Every structure is written in structure tokens, then in C-alpha cells.
Amino acid sequence: MSLTRATAIWVALAAAALAVFVASLALGSIALSPLRVVDALLHGRASSPDVIDEIVLSLRLPRALGGFAAGALLAVAGALLQVLLRNPLAEPYVLGVSGGAATFALAAMLAALPWWSVDAAAFAGAFLSIVLVLGLARRELWRGEPQDASPRLLLTGAVIAAGWGALITLMLAVAPENRLRGMVFWLTGDLNGVATPWAALIALVVVLAGIVPAAPQLNVMLRGDAAAQALGVPVVRLRLSVYLAASLAAAAAVTTAGTIGFVGLVVPHVLRLAFGNDQRMLLPAAALAGGVAVMGADLIARTVIAPAQLPVGVMTALVGVPVFLWMLLRRSP
Amino acid sequence: MNAKLRASLHVSALALRAGGRTLIDDLTLTFSPGEAWCIAGPNGAGKTTLLNVLAGLSKPAAGAVSLDGVDLNDWRAAGLARRRAWMPQSTHDAFSATVLDVVMLNRFPHLSGWGWESDADRRAAHAALDALGLAAFASRDVLSLSGGERQRVALAATLCQGAPLLLLDEPLSHLDLHHQIECLEALGDWVRDPAAQRTLIFSCHDLNLARRFATHALLIDGAGRAHAGPVRHVLSAERASAAFGYALTLIREGAHEALVPVMRAPHP
Image 1 (cartoon, chains in turn orange, red):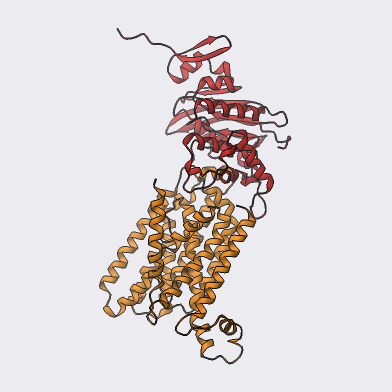
Image 2 (cartoon, rainbow over the protein chains, first blue to last red):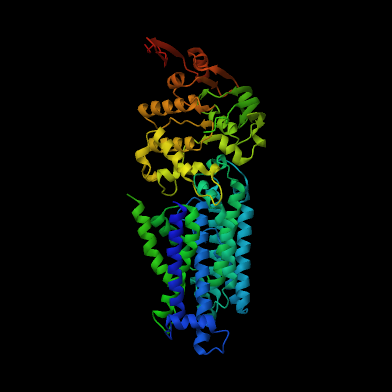
């Protein structure tokens, strides 16, 4: 992998992202030409906006940007956790971040709190889960020891996630009928309620700015903690920052769009199969490709049986399950 | 490499303990440039622990280790990584990667800027692969390699780091006899390079290969006793028998020597 090749990959993915972005703004109940979309983006706010400008700017733009940001965050979180746990099956939700977010969000919905407090509760739950795993597995994350610490961290997170899962099932079981639909949509991952994508976009920029400079160190860490330490990588500090970056990315994504599945697992793997496992290329590429995947899946989810809308998580899972099974089975001889 | 890079490793009053046992007690020793040291001893005697301590990866129970007169604790991680390379006993690959990319990872201490390899790093990786006869493997997937091939790739990666001090934990395990000798010859050429001042320390279970290819040996018995010195002097039949707890005898044929287990009288 060289910088030239990585740049070519990034440019190609960015072009795909731009194309899907414009399509997301143009397609829907009222189909628009790309030129009309650009016109709405450039002049919608300045001149007196008509109804077309309103649709593009107030409905389709936040949803497309929110989808892009959530997908990008999930794919980056998945790629990071696969490196941290040195396990190809790791995904953004494996350490319980989404479980905590979902439990709190569902509790807020159960109590019929307003939408913004559902978002706030989701983030608080994700944060609590991060702190919980950090506290319980602190020895594994902190101590610079030659032994491989990953299995115990993974087990701690998986058990916490299972605990959240039980609470979620409990709440679904006791929820009144009229709230159940909203709760299930939230759990599947839904971009319908995205009011403002800016928090997720800011989280994406912060996570990428924090972790992309450490990508060469992540490459070395894939060889094992002791080998990385011998090459001069501050392993303990790096593990901690990777854990925090991945958790915050997953928390921001879940808060924005609910638990969209499979993007964080499948997107990094598809990129690895296509272009190799160099983290310097992979992390920015995962952000772009994850964004394209969720933005595109949402475009399909809201147009395929229009005017009805599917939760975007259904689309990503329907595509993700066969892709993932194919990847899993081709590994065995 | 830079001829000014010397690598003289000094241990003073070193003690290693594990699980209440004293593995090494009060060891004072200098590993000097141009020397190839073999660390020998029975299973669990502390060879791996000692190599980890010498590499600065873990702390000794007592005593100090210094590289070129500076205590290992006072070295900056990046500076130390340019001066000593360490190879673990085994490597686990979770993801596929090409052999060249895996070898080039050990150029990490030399990267600058955004961390992309320069042409010099690529040349070093190819040179290390060539030195071990692995040039044809450069684009192979590491997951497709056999245990012995993977071991040679790990050795090439360690050489590619360009450090004048090599610490190798059982570099010959999984290798067939032919490749064991080929690797030892490559390491011998590496340590004798007149343009550089290099030091090699490796652990090894084959006492005869050690006697032939190492210049010095450190024999530890896992109970606190250690012998260090020229290899033929330390890995003698008498000392090796005592350390390994089995009688060995030295047989000679012309210029060839071998330590072999003595025949025990068959039971009547």
C-alpha cells in the first residue's frame, strides 16, 4: 500500500459518496433533477424558498447527512474494534455500547418523554456502558503486559451486552401496544427521526482526526501487543484511545439513527478483501464506504415501497446477512 | 546501516523470578558487538523471560539492563526500537496480509510524517527477504504459509528493522534442518558484517547447532545457576548434563563434534 494507491481509493469512494448523496436529495415522492438539487442547496436559504427547496433542505438533506455520518461512524468503529480485539468478527455493538444506548432510549420512549430526551438518554446509556466496560476490564486495557489481553476485554463487553439485551426484551414485553412500533423501529435503526445531523458529523470529524494519525501504530498493534511494544508503540495508551474512539463513534451513530446492524461488521471486511488491511488506507476508506452504504440503504428503504418507508436497518441487514455468510464460509477450506 | 550504531548490552546483578522460583540469581554479563550468544536451558528455565527483560519488555525482579551505557528504562521507546529488535516465539495472524507488508511493519521505528514507507524502507524489506531466501514469497498471503515459512518471515521482519542488536526467542523452532542452518548462516553473516557492530542473542534447544554457529553461550538451569562464556566452554558435556538433568557425552569424528545423550544400560 502506498499513499498514491490509498488516495486513488479515497477519491473513488468520495465520488461514490457524492453520487449517492445527490441521488438521496433528488429521489423520493417528488423526483428532482440533480441541477434542481444543486440550485436548492446553493440558493434555497438565500432567496425566498419554495416547497421544493423546503423538501430538499429540511427533509432530505438532514436525513442524507445523518445517514452518511451514522454509517461512517459505524464502519470506523467496527474497523477499530476489529483491530483492538484482533478478531475479524468484532463489530461496533460487540462491547455493549449499543445495548446501553438502546436500553436507555427505550426507557425514555416507555416513559413517553419528548424525542430529544430519547436521543439524550441513548447517549447517556452508551456512555454508561463505555464506563462500565472500562471499569471492569481496566486491567486488560491498562496494564502493559506481553500476554494477549483481548479475549477478556471481549468477554467483558459481550456479557455486558447480553445484560442490556435482557433489559431490552423486558421493556418490549411490558411496553403498551401504541409505543411498541416506535421502539421496534428504533431498535432496527431508523433515519426517519433525524432532525439534525450536525452532532453526528462533528463526532465523525473528531473521531477521524483523533485516530487516523495513529493508523501506522494500529498496523503494528495487529501483530500483537508485545511485538508492538518492542517496535516502540505505546500499547497501553493506544488501546485506551482506540477503545474510546470506537465507543464514542458507536454511541454517536446509535444516538443518531438507532442500532443499524451489519454496516460496522461488513464494510471494513469488504474493504479489506478488496484493498488489503492497511489501517492508514482502511480507516478513511471505511468512513466513506460506511457512509455510502447507509445513505444508499436508506435511499432504497424509503423509495422501494413508497410511500411506505422501511427502517434502514432492515435494508442493511437484508444485504449484510448474505454478504457476511459468504465471507464466513469462503474462509473455511 | 550506520556503522556508528554499536550495540553493547550489559546486565548487572540481574535476578529473575517466576511463581516463587528463582530462575536467575545475580547475573552480571556483557553482550558485546561481534558476538552471537545462544541462551540454552531446559523448559521453564527462564529463556523467554530473560529475552523479554533484555528487550525491555518486562522488568527484572532485581538488577539492571543497559544498552550502550544507558539503562533500558531511560531509553525512549522509538530510539530503543531502532537499536534492538525482538522476535517472539510465535506470531498469530488474525487477518490476511502479504508477506512484504508484514515484513515492512518492522520499519515502523523509521517512519516519519504521516507514517508511509519510503523507498528505503521497501528496499530494506526486500533485502531482508532476500537474505533468508524468501524473495519469491513477497506477495504471498501470510495466512497461507506453513509454520516454518511463517517463522522465517518473522525472522526477515526482525532483520528488516535495521537494529544492531537482535533478541530472538527460538528462531529455529518449526524449521527443518536445512532451513535451520540457512537461517543460522544468514544470522552469522549479519553479525560478522565488518561495516557494522552487531550483537545477536537467541535462545535455542539444539546444543549442536549452538556449538557450531554461536560464539558464546549462556546456560541456565532454572534454579538460579548460570554459566556464560565461549560456546564450547559453556556447552560442554559436563555442564550441559548438569543443566538438563540427563547425561550427555561429546563424540568427535574428524573436525565434527556432537553432544549426544549417553546410552543407558538396557534393563536385564
